Length: 231
Image (tube, rainbow, N blue to C red; front, side, top):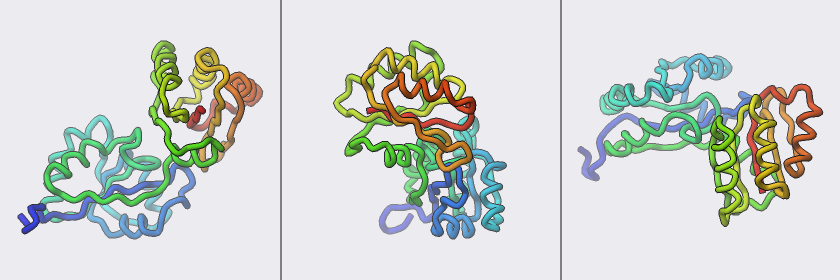
């Protein structure tokens, strides 16, 4: 133990990765990923593409929602041995609807300092271009698959004091979701962001029925990923 009561360990850093365009990574993140001993990645195949672009060679271990509880003790043991570890997700900032929480919580509880390197987030990017007053907002993550669950979340959001809400949704279910929103809150304003920073990038604006009409008119609407901002 150090005099402060903290464990003398390797460094543990949470690193934000691009949400699509691989140029959207900070110089600090690249420098850190070059220097660590281990990268705990949500999908090593996806992260390898990013590392290849920047000429980074590093040992990787998978750390996804199905194995992070199992891997927690092993990765903690590496940190306690003095190894430096970075945790990344496939896109954006770990723990924001992505894995990482289990390991980060365990490290903090073990007295291991956790440092974050900021970067891309689909939530923040969508809010920044929405044109809505975003002094405060609610983030709900991925919407459920069931229609009743989607309706319940929209009703809950509409009753909150915070007037701007953000959701993630699958392109395959999107039209159904917007139609449900039209029934729950027909007068709401929508900024629907598709495939932010990527190939199919497009923003739809209007009330729910107007946005639904724009989606119906776009034959490529079921491609890419969606971030839904509602005021």
